[in-house]
Amino acid sequence: MTLPARALSVVVCGAGPASEVGQLVKLALERGWTVQVVSTPAALGFLDTTAIEAQTGSPVRSQYRNPGEPRSRPADAIIVAPATYNTINKWAQGISDTYALGVLAEATGLSVPIVVLPFVNSALAARAPFRRSVEELRREGVRILLGPGGVEPHEPHTGGELITSYPWHLAFNEVEQPGAAADFAEVVDHKRAFGASG
Ligand SMILES: Cc1cc2nc3c(=O)[nH]c(=O)nc-3n(C[C@H](O)[C@H](O)[C@H](O)COP(=O)(O)O)c2cc1C
Image (cartoon, rainbow, N blue to C red; front, side):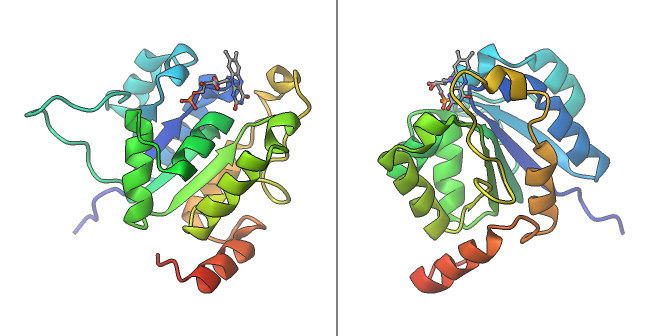
């Protein structure tokens, strides 16, 4: 019997690497996942939705469905990439004012594996609200690949030069092999300390 393909949702936020999300979709499709791309409203301006829909065979979702329309398949895992300052902060605060944040809010509560690959400059990453958000999401079991083994915040106004070297593979490896990224030990410790499940 053939096992059904695992379902990966990719939540894309409004930052430069969003234009290259097809690279992550390709990696996942090659490894046998089905892929659904969820876009924040801001990310839509960066994306070639027609190309992504052709690649995945599914519509790019940025809004809640209308009553009576079919639900998307529940995700077995979620990657948030590129993850913005805005979405990370709102998600940690429990705000759900976009479809993407609604997906993340519920998946966090359900302990669906979620891997986050931020794309944030060093000025924003140094802000106390952002550091608190990262800490709080990690306590809830979200794997945030920020710092050693993940992405380092970049100098302000240099993001455009880093789009082509954005390390999509780190997020995908972490989904396939939990613990592949260096900070995972820290996440496990948080989960033990704070009793998060999943
Ligand atoms: C060209 C451009 C590049 C941007 N790059 C980033 C970025 O690298 N990181 C970031 O956090 N926000 C970046 N922003 C700002 C976000 O798009 C903005 O905060 C937006 O509200 C994010 O919404 P979202 O989190 O719902 O996607 C950029 C905006 C533009 C127009």
